[in-house]
Length: 202
Image (cartoon, rainbow, N blue to C red; front, side, top):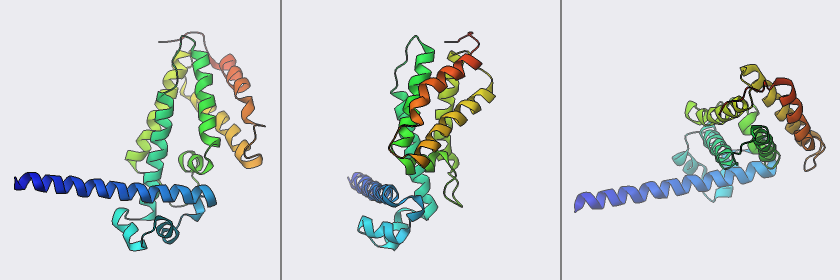
């Protein structure tokens, strides 16, 4: 009986800790979405979360630990988005669908895009565990390219450079518009016309 009570108490404490961490992360996202990633400070974060700065340290050992948790959450959200995309008998259409989803994911939340896809925070590098989530997303894209007969790794680099280039131009020069993002269809058509071999795989 005593053992069960200890387990229940331990589970309750862990659940409370995870809830508190989630609240801190929610406040962190709220802050950076309003003022940018550079505005993330532990003092302001504590104020927004309704706790003291030392209490923040009870849940995260450093500012970089908070950023790492944010990175992991962003990478998981991207993975979940990709997992929910339709898979059809038309790999070219599937690649276009993914490209549009990627661009939308980025422009809809600029701080998340900057944290996940740009080195925008000096001194921050995601942990191997968090970075692995981002790598998995890239593996999914590589598999989709193979379905389109695109197998050379350098062409994946070209695809990511072009699509993130559209995002960069959009968020830098016309936030909320579509001057650059509207060209996703054309970009993917040109990419496939240039690099797809016609030898698709399933």
